[in-house]
Image 1 (cartoon, helix red, strand yellow):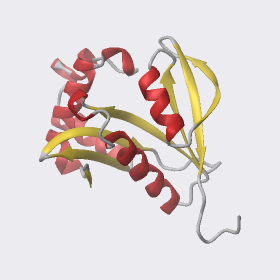
Image 2 (cartoon, helix red, strand yellow):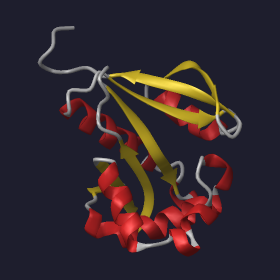
Image 3 (tube, helix red, strand yellow):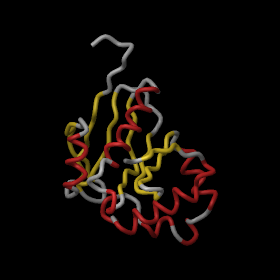
Image 4 (cartoon, one colour):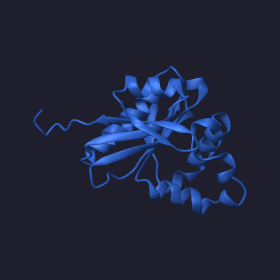
Length: 163
């Protein structure tokens, strides 16, 4: 069972450690590269800024070990939150960690009055695409980034709104 905790800028060391692992272990899954966050780019101020720039950042822990991460942007003018920096460590895959992270971001987005959550995932990341589809995300076109990525979106229901 995954334990989800919301982070503040003071949690930058934990975020940094798992982000370095994610960029090293799954370099083709992200737009960023490990080298972008090492050397001169690896500063406390930058990591704190990363956790401040995006208003919602969570880590998932399994058996006391950080095993996943995700972030949500502030809703844009159309009420859309972007799910970013999604990662689940190999040892935690297939154990509900991804589902828990997505649920945390979508619940937060709903609490912010967002209408939907969207993401981009490289087309060759079949496992991530399957996770997102299982969690209610629908295909919404493609975009060219470093390579072709699938855009996906999930509408949100608000308890106070009639269906």
